Length: 150
Image (cartoon, rainbow, N blue to C red):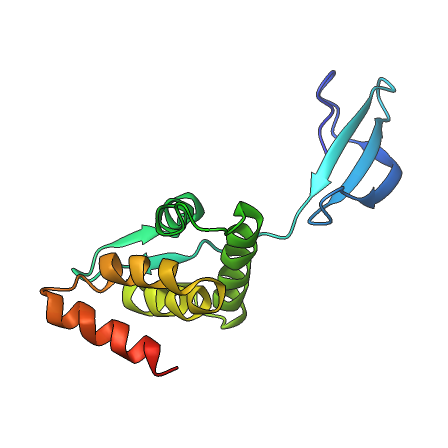
């Protein structure tokens, strides 16, 4: 690791511990050239998740975009943001555990809907109305009927 003060290529690790969020190793280092102490973080390199849209183009998975959709679906509902964050964390972990780094937007939407159904049924219907792009009131009514049978 190159020293940020003098540029020397050699340093020694003085202290090593997990980061506060437990997603990295925090290392205190000391430059063998000038004695300057600095901190580095070692993280596991993750491949980005890619969402394949209906028209075939690809875009990176965007947690914030999903959060905006979930917040919109849960407006005026008693669903804490922490629950939505945990839901997104769980979805992202599930996708990474599958070992594939590409997911279709249809599959992603289905996963979100399944998880959202357990959180809040009104939010589920709101999210489904946008995700499934109901063409008429009959499609919407059919979705509501399927929920009432659960």
